[in-house]
Length: 145
Length: 91
Image (cartoon, rainbow over the protein chains, first blue to last red):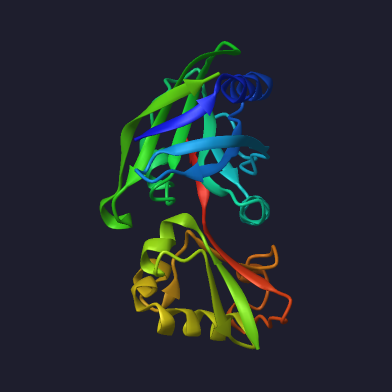
């Protein structure tokens, strides 16, 4: 199972993280689930970070924005398959906060480290398990042309 | 009246793998009750100790019911209720 995403969309996410540095960027990944649990990303939709008191360390996407994106995706025959955000001057690794605030089981959480304003590394993590026993597992990113 | 409820990805395993479920309701509260009557497995994923879980957002059109009239929020036949978990995190 992997997260398949084009190099162009990956680059778009990197630019988003660089533009919002030193604050965390965030967005929604729209696409489709395949028959074996993998995901194909069709779009990476930048969102506003509504966490205004500490945007350097936290992100939050408003429910209204998630609702709008989900509805648009479903009308187009797509689905929300994951989310992305950046870690300014922190590793591209999920944190305790990332896990505590992750609730979209079966979806990918993609994190890009932005060091001194430049995108360095992107990793993806799959949320598995029920809320009381959830975990984020390493997920392979398949970059397609 | 019949109302559509959009079920987000993490909740579909508990809703017969459906992404849209039709309920009959005049308010959001009635819609949620009809929803869990049809799909009882959803209950523990939506609520805890009789209250909506803090990270579960219920939105007729785009506003969360927490900022409207909560369970008493009326719904119209043209409304679609979306149930979406929160999206947040950070270092």
